[in-house]
Amino acid sequence: MITSSNSSSLNSSNIQTSTSSLTSSTSHNATLTTTSTNEIQKSDDRLSLGSSSYILDDNLRVRTNSVEIAFSEASKGAALAQVTNMSLDHQSKLLSNVSDRLNYILKNETTNDSQESIRKDINTLLTQFDAIAADSNYQELYSLQKSTTNTDTSTSHSFRISEFPPIVLSTESMQSNTEGLGLSDLKNLAQDGLTGSVANDQSKVVISALEVIEQFQSDYITLLNSLKTSTNSLSDLHKSFEKSNENTKEINFQFESLTFDRNAILKEMGAFSQTQANALQSNVLNLLSFNSNSLNTSNNNFTSTNSFISDKEKTIK
Image (cartoon, rainbow, N blue to C red; front, side, top):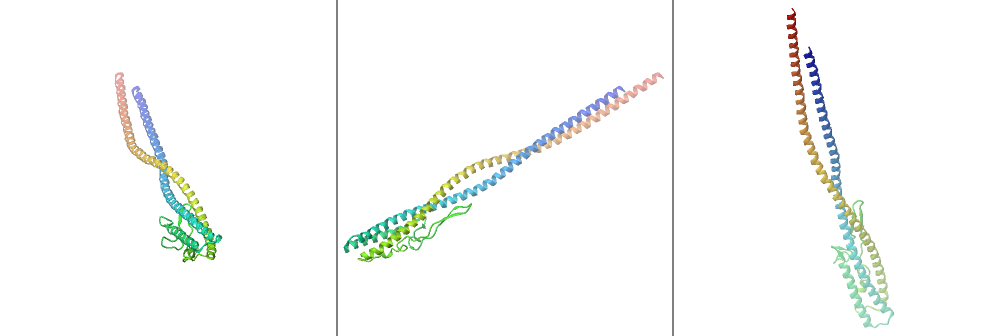
């Protein structure tokens, strides 16, 4: 009876120990699983941020491309405006020389020979004036007349300096040649055609033409200043985008690393889950095997005790 009791107590204790060990193992495995799951969640959160960085990267590329186009447009417009201003300034000086010669006739007694010499000078000056109008362009964008061979009014040229919001700056259409400014009669005076009376009339036409050119210059100076301001702003903006793009590239690199880490974690979790399942199964089998052996031992002890009592009883009898 004493042996049976001790075996039963030992069996119970071992079962409790095995069960406790199994529970502890399961709890430990569950903790590891939870930790890995948390790591996956953190990885997913960071991957979500990485996905956002890819979207940001695409947006930056679009914005950077837009700024580059706008900068190119603004630079082209500024170059055309600068060329045009230089041409108008040269034309203004030529007309001022024409005006001076006409005033000389009006303020001085001149001979026919002097007047003819002045007429030839004026013709030369106005020919140069028209040559400037025919040559004033930047990348085939003509500003003072239609083209080199077409003296009609120039085409207005537009430059899109911003996509968001859309901003367009345009040149004025103009015809800054002798035909457009009413100087054709003065340029085409026949020999000995410049008299005091003609000089008086044409002097007024030249003054009017100078005023028109001055207005042309004012418009183009305003346009040039606006375009220069735009190019400076766009240049700064482009540098800012390039810096942001560099930062985003770093984020994207981290995103790729996170993707690799996440896949590694998932792979480790798969291997761990398999190990966990095998360990759990092994623990259960060991526990069952131990319980079975303990039960057999208890039965044997119980049988032995019964035999001992039976022999004693026989002796008493």
